[in-house]
Amino acid sequence: MQPESDHPHHRPLLALGLRLAAAFVLAALLACVKLASEKGIHLAEIMFWRQLPTIPILFAWFALRGRLDVLATRRTGSHLRRSGFGLVGMAMNFGAATLLPLAVATTLNYSSAIFAVLLSALILREPTGVWRWSAVAMGFAGVVLIAQPWGGELPLLGAAIALGAALMIALISVQLRDLGRTEHPFTIVFYFSLFSVPVLALAMPFVAKAHAPDEWLLLLACGIIGLLGQVLLTAALRYGAVANVIVMDYSGLIWATLFGWLVFTSLPPASFWFGAPLVVGAGLLIAWREHRLGLARRALMEPKEA
Image (tube, rainbow, N blue to C red):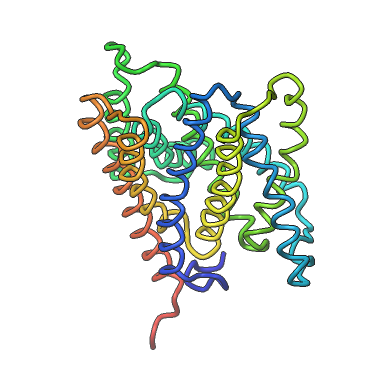
């Protein structure tokens, strides 16, 4: 396998900047989704309008630049699988944001790093040492402290959906990294919308309703902000490894807490402030360990001097 540093698109600083911007944009998207849900707009309709603008915007962008060839692909099957996982992940991610405080939903999403370790150990049979298992245990303790299944401060359904979204994030990150080796970031985003919009359209006759102007603005914002966030997220994985860029995701906790306070005048429960550092710390520990292992693998692959 090609070393990460020799990857033709490997630009670590650019990847970190893109992922940092993506964290802010995606926090803003969840705030828009939560506002739309509070106005009585069905989740399926929010998802439909989140996806639909992407198709004409990207098509027009490349048509005006004479670069429609960028949308050509030989990996239709991979795009279909990514779209399937993406739809499930989006439904869970948006659903968690409507049921939980934004900061809580965002923090539980960070447990995706824990799921990545578990998937690697259980499915890929990769060796998992004491550092990563310790991080998994620490992250799990943080999740339990935040959710507090014995206390009833947070809806357990919302916490379960947020953890499901974290699992999907772990799976999708691997898919995006694989697709990014051959596909332009806009190509990946375009086909995600192209394949998901017809599925979401099937629900529209049952959930769509007339909207006031402010509701249409919210739905439009979901589409535009969502497109920007998806492009930034996908581009970050094109230019850097998952283990290296995922550290920037944790800045989203700041934005989510800020949006929750300014827009919804709510702050997370007290248990959150005890559990969140454990979840974030677990993710950072896993990212640090993956980075060190990557450096060790590259050192072994480099030719030794005579």
